[in-house]
Length: 192
Image (cartoon, rainbow, N blue to C red; front, side, top):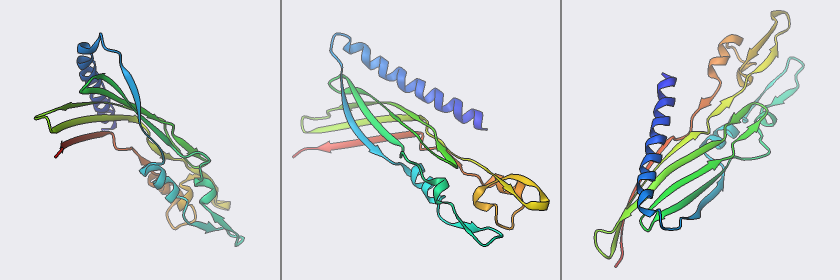
């Protein structure tokens, strides 16, 4: 099942690039310009990863182990979005995310690719369409090695190691999440 979704994302990205290149053929004599559209740090997956750091557990000795240090990244995922204009009404949207990492999770770097086009139904209005696809950028939580004394050492979900769940069962609760991979935006603007 996962194989199909990765193939689908790749096909969507290839289709978007093909459409953008078709529009580009009309602009071969025109000089392309690239503009910064957006730059920001953080994402819903960054917020989710930080949320995993809430809580902790108590060791047999009575000392408290907080999850915060395991889920604190020194660098938050930064996203840069750019627009390369290929005709007055068409452009290629592209960008990247740097990813982020802490001791117990990783957000992969990402690549964004898409296109933007607009038409003018009348002199006072603009109808624009943009489609973007994101490749990469997934969040994956890492396991811990927990020593259960006489029971042995197990690879476990760090957040559930001190609970009632069997150690080997905790691994199925490790977070593995993908970002929003496709974004479609349709806008109509009328100027009075």
